[in-house]
Image 1 (tube, helix red, strand yellow):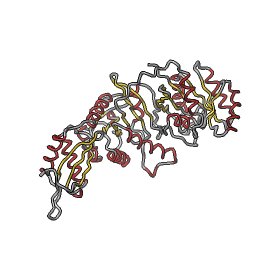
Image 2 (cartoon, one colour):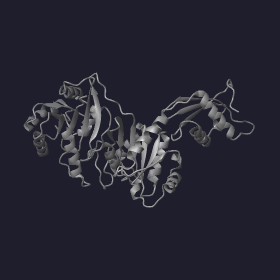
Image 3 (cartoon, rainbow, N blue to C red):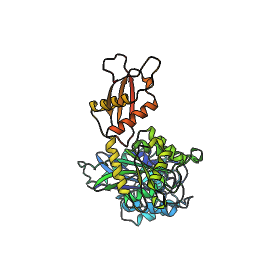
Length: 444
């Protein structure tokens, strides 16, 4: 199926990321007044009038990156240009034609691809009149838009899909089987793992701390199965966060965890597990996400035994003690494919339903093994249990008094269900509902 790619190009601060978010109808790329916020290629699938295309946001051409990543950013821009079936050349009407706009136009003129000039920040009719000045760039007729206000958005989308008249609206793209979010502290190797899975330099890899800022969806396939891996910014202690860019990066990490079907918590083997690793683990627990504790750079761990390191990790992250562990080298590709297979296994577990009779049998057994503590002359009772949903598997237990069933007892039930039902390596969610009339026979 022909699935066209549309790449957004322009100098810094013309509103490329704002336009990207506007067309995507959600905040994906970080938008900030500071130049050079976008570094990697950020992409999203757009559907308009039943037709699909991939939209790519890029860094600003001509930026001098403060972290000396200019070459890497330019490489990502060039890849995006080469992938493009249509280029949106974005300019800023308020700034007028700048020397850097002219340089960008000269660069684009050397490639044999259709180009659409998009004049951004046209919030009023006065600015729309000024858009005519950009004819000087020799890019033909332009489209005016206000990415922030959304003015001109529909016209731009119509123009984009009209460029690809042979798009088949009847065929559907094969949806990824699951989304895998990769999280961890800075320089744990998240971007290296993404590039290994994608078999290309999909995101920038650098020793510079904080290279990745956006959360980036990257498609990859294993044996014909499509997946999405979500690269995220490296997390550090809250008090060390500097400026709005890092704040928004952190917010996107949390959103990416919430979007995930499976989370990979990437742990840097040569470094100790820190408060940052614990903080990430705690957030994964609160969201009830299946998680794999992936130990990266295991080739640099020396003579440490796997069993010894497993005990160390579980002691530092006790809330994820049920999560499986995998030892990899992202840069060498060691055990990477096997880790994705493991992610598929726990994703399947999270989608499992058990029969009501089987569930009640296991709950009754667990209750008989260990009752909640009595309160004066009153004893706890469980009347009935049922599974109400998956991802995460969620159970409602009808009881005589909810106050008996505290967090400790919930953890106990979770462990018992994981032991006796096909939920061995995933989090489980419980709701206790008080039942006033004992119309059901209680579990004794």
